[in-house]
Each structure stands twice: as C-alpha cells, then as structure tokens.
Length: 423
Image (tube, rainbow, N blue to C red):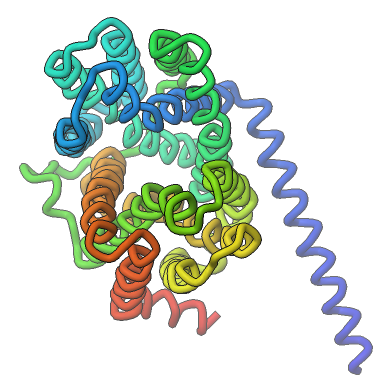
C-alpha cells in the first residue's frame, strides 16, 4: 500500500511539474505572438532606461550644471514629488472615467520627453524647476498609468495579472541595471546635453509606441454610477496596505540613499563596492520577481507581503553588523527577496481591493510609492546627521517591523491565512 501511495504521489508530482512547464511555455508563446504585449514590454524597457538615466543623475545636474545649493536641490525634489503625487491621483481618476488609457500613457511620455529637452536647453534654476514641475510632474503619471494598463492587458489576455506585472517589473529591474552606468558614461563623454538627448528620445519613442501599438482595450467596467469622491471606496484593508507600502518604500529609499555613504565613509570600501551591491541586488530581483509572480496566488499575496516585511526586518538588523564586501554581497539575497515582493505585489493587491477603478488604485500605489521615497530621503538625512550612516539601518529595521506588525494585525492577512489553512 505504501509503495502504491508513493507511486501515485510521484505521478501527481510529475503531472504537476509538466503542467507548470506547459504553463510557462504558454506564457512565452503568448508574449511572442501578441503585438500588444511586445509593445508594452518595449515601452516599459525604454521608460525604465530613460528614467534610470535621469533620476540617478538629476542631483548632479542641478549641482554642477545649474549651480544649485543642497537646500535648493532638496526643495526641487520635494516640490516635484508633491506635484507628482497630486497629478498621479488626478490623472488616475480621469483615466477611469475616460477609459482610453493608452492615450494618457502616450501623452505623459511625450511630456516627459519635452521635460528632457528643457533640461538640455535651460540652466536657470527657477526655469528648470517650473519645467520639471509641469512636464516631469505631469509626465510622471505614466508610471501609474502603465501599471493600470498592464493590469487591463492581463485581464484581457491569458496571462495572470501577477505574472504579467512581475515580467514588466523584471524588465524595469534590468533597465535599472543598465541605465545608471549608461547615464554617467554619457555625462562623462558628452556632458549633460549628451544625456538628455537620448533620454528625451527614449521617452518620445516610448510614447509613440504606446500610441500606435497599444491595443484599445475594452475591459468590462462596473456600470454602477460613480461616486463623486472616487476615494470613498478605500476600505480598512486598502488603508492598511497603503501605510505598509509607505513604511517599506521609506526604508527602501533610505537604503538606496545611505548604502553608498555607508560603504565609502563608514566602511572605507570604495565607491565601486556600492555600485556592485546595487547592481547585484537588482540582478537578483529578476528571478525572484518571476518565481513569486507566477505563484503569488498559491502562496497568498498578503502572506508574501508579511514575509517581505519580516525579511526586511532581518536584513536591516544584520546590515549594520556587516563590515566586509563578502558579507554585504551575501546580504543582497534577503534584500532582493523582500524588495522584489514589495515592488511588485502591492499594486495588484490595491487594484483588487479598491473600488474606484484600476487607474485610481494604481495612482494610490504610485503616490504611496513616491511619498515613501520622499519620506525616506528626509529620514536618511536627519538620522545620519544625528547618529551616523550605519545606524540609519536600525531605524529601517524598526519601521519594517512596524509594517510586519500591521500586516499580522490586519483582518485581511488572518482571513487569507485561514483560507490557505483550510485548503
């Protein structure tokens, strides 16, 4: 009887494995045969590379080319971030009412292209600030709109939303591996003009590709009358998730800002080690994104978010104790685990639980994302000034632990845990 049971279990495992392989092959076949998915992938890649080139070099541009003081640079980033959060929410609501999301994606990308041209031509701080607020501020809504369009594309295709979102996030991760060194090389070789010409061209081509190659999706929408306030549909789970997103994106932003200073000034390991850590971590994110993206429904997204928060707590508790390059590289494994989950799952979760529409839900995610990033910048500066660079990560561990406690206390996690236990 035992041998028969073992044989039956082996057959079931083989069948399950064959079905999983067949599912992966079906996803690849769908991608290669669907022009809309290929266009979405191409647009995501160009936006990722262009964004990585511009974002990582903007403070250098303001300091060297414009002559801005540290305070002026801080005000520039804060002002643009506040406007981007506002425009994200406004455009998100409008996109749900208008319905033709690809036009908004293309328009936002074209505005970003114009913003790159302004940066190329202007050297007056206030003129650059105005152009940044108008063109990059409104153009920044392309992030939320691409997330919403990706979900609509998944809903109208044979690919699961988690899988497609993870693939697009993987493309972005690869773009962020290539974009920063490419941007700095262009500056070294051709100056800031040599940076913003290709960046503007990438945004323009991405907008053109979206306008002419994105299909006009006709997703079935709820015909019930829209509430005057589209954010009234925010239930307790959505509010809790947004707080968790802000907390975890805050610690991620602190890490991105502080790791290079910790490596060079506290550990005296050299700037190349900081670049190696960021690149290695981004490379590790890709397989994690793909693996858990395909299995998020099986494990449960709320449970995975809890695992990510716990992983972040462990990572930031160990990071101040690491003193060698090898130890820092090993810690990129848990770092890639929690980061990849936090940067991919929450948008799907909000889209599932917010009643206002995909555009509104995606805008709420991107606004939480940007608010966490802005808060991380302020926190990193204040804590590092008072306690030192390495001790900043203890604050990150506390914030990540708070996020984990919120997820444990949330009814959504307990409900999902009960469902999986019953199965």
